[in-house]
Amino acid sequence: MRRKPGEGPSSGLLLAGNAAIPCLLGKSGISPNKHEGDGATPSGRYELLFGFYRADRVSPPPTRLPLQALTPFDGWCDDPAHPAYNRPVDLPFAASHEKMWRDDGLYDICLVMDHNFSRRSRNRGSAVFFHLTAGKPYTAGCVAISRKAMMKLLPRLKTGTVMDIRP
Image 1 (cartoon, rainbow, N blue to C red):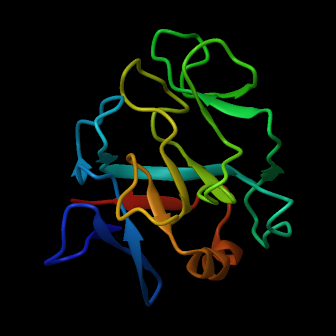
Image 2 (cartoon, rainbow, N blue to C red; image 1 turned 180 degrees about the vertical axis):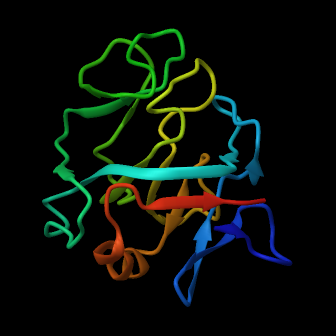
């Protein structure tokens, strides 16, 4: 994955085999020094670990990644001071968090990248996902592609598939 030449900082190309899939990146572009809330997509190599999907909107997608159906009670902690930082949490949750059950379809399919997950550091970024596009021309720091492209790509993905994000 890399920035799309000649485009703004939030436009990228996801290279998968011979395919070049347009993707969206963080509004601040790609950064080697990701920090919580900076709007940047972190550069580096990140394994895909597992994912979520909205069973009320999507049939279980064909993939070798472990997937879990989302519920309205699923969240993700984005509070660097909390012990559950950058982890899934059950809602209601007192600390700062993101709701995984969204009206905009962004997380109808949402895959977790191993950015700051296996080895967490406070303030190095949370909820950096590979998910669907939903109307905005950028993400908050994730990588996003169209639903159609995601459905084509999912059968090729498995635990350990690496997303290589380059400036």
